[in-house]
Image (cartoon, rainbow, N blue to C red):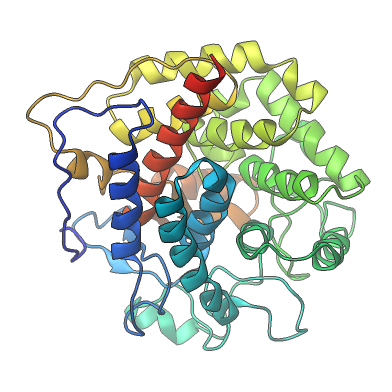
Length: 388
């Protein structure tokens, strides 16, 4: 069953990657259309998203989170300079309307500029989850680094806030007082960042989260700490040993697919060169190209195409049949960029069992963010064409 949304059909039979201004404007208008216009199921200004339990694939539930809203604004800011004046006005409206949303998810206990995946004004776990919501207060999640850095980037937080948050991050790394227990043995002594800010939360590693944290560090030109270096070392080793290919749902359980891990890595590397990662670029390009050619998913091909573009490589063409509707391809509810894996915090054997069985696994779907990913791809295609 699809989420109840009104579809806006793009009147194109073939998908053109030549930086077409019309389709870029249509995609921006579609995102603006999907953005919540008033307080209701979703907070006003948010980009709606829905979750589906792995063992109940017939039902989506509205999920109240800032994650996709932050990603849309953050990415629009990144591509802003490549939009026309008309398109910039639409993007500015989307970004401006999103800013008040984030307050609903801000830390309230210590008034830190850190953010939660679910509302903090009225604590929730899995909004609209029925009986599970009886545990809202006792089982509420701590703030996390992934949402925090994405939201701060989306808000264009000032340098002093970035330095403050980076300082807070240093208190939540893998160490002897709270050691990570559910990653590869080679990584269990690395002082890399945990996903969570909460002191009572088990330490866990997710390399895609670590990539987002390092993007934040690089974007704000922060002084690298030992945790930053350890996180980079973990990422490098995971790529060198192909763990992102052979064990993607273990090494990046919140994103869980190689294509999505590669997308995060290309985004980090496109910001400014990191020499140790640059040396891996040829093999990453080969991996992304191979996966692209093996994939039957339009949205996965979009991610891999964008990754290749960010590495300066020309991607294979994405073919669309004359009878295929572009909106349906983009707003494919089977494509999940983010996964909630409740097993991620448990010790190794429990984590492996829950991940394999998909007990406590939820897939997230956001039609607005899907449109944004296609828009981003078109802009990067345009950049490649201009540079050639």
